[in-house]
Image (tube, rainbow, N blue to C red; front, top):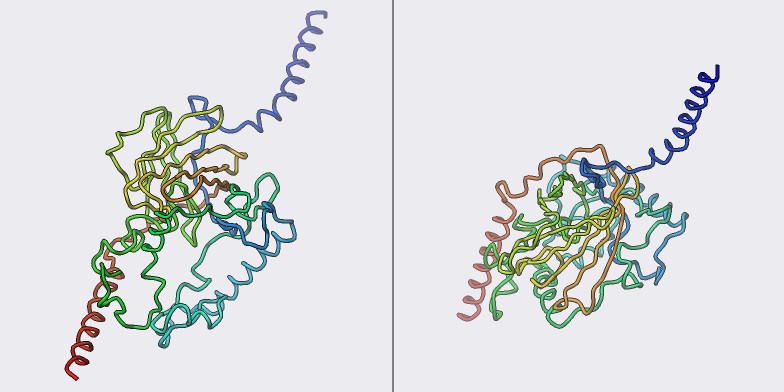
Length: 368
């Protein structure tokens, strides 16, 4: 009888321990076979929270719940309107094009008479709400500087950004305005076009680093092993391979997405990336760009992505940001950007035709 009592007491103790252990075990994040947090999975990083903070929020990092609800409601209303006016069988727009949904006709004044407009809201997938971390909604992805803005440019950085966007700051009046100007023209050859136009790197630094959300194709697929972490980006199918517990390549080895090496600090994967090419996806950053990223789990449904950008040749001081990466059951589909890149061919051919017209007009004027 005493023996049975001891067994019953022992079983009761085991049940009590199980009851105490089970809740915390359920909250424990999934881990790999080597005991590290398992980041493998697919994430949709689309968010209505901008990289830089709207000026009206000042130094305020967080939205109120009402403000976050309003932002989400306005986006949904825009999407619904976009679905109503979108017609996949529509004819070509009239001269000058139509303003995209959500923009008034003043769009034509800034885009130029020859513009055919841009995407309407039907084709945009930039998220359904603001970034939420620990129940708080964010006004911007950038959190340092405290005003949520990019630091000031250096002289070299300002010159690069001006050169990068020089072709887009002129009104599109349907003429080759660059003919007769000193220096190279904006459409001289394929190499004069942006990296995104050439389908080499996704626009907006979506592949990073730092990896930032854009208008659409915001899915990321992570595959993790003991020695590597692979991030497949939906936009332009860029792939990042992060080597864990390794050394950086020599400085002369330069890569489009830089050379990424990670190490574990507890449950956080810290990644340092440098050795970029002269051309980077990060705005007008230089080859001296260095980015530090931190990947950690908020819970089993989202990652926390943090980053710090340091490029003393471009910005006057480093800047940092963070946002959540919610997990999704969606698939990452092929993005065949460069298969028969007819748009790039059209840009260059159109430029040659306009240049021919400008030269002929100039010759006619001189004859008169």
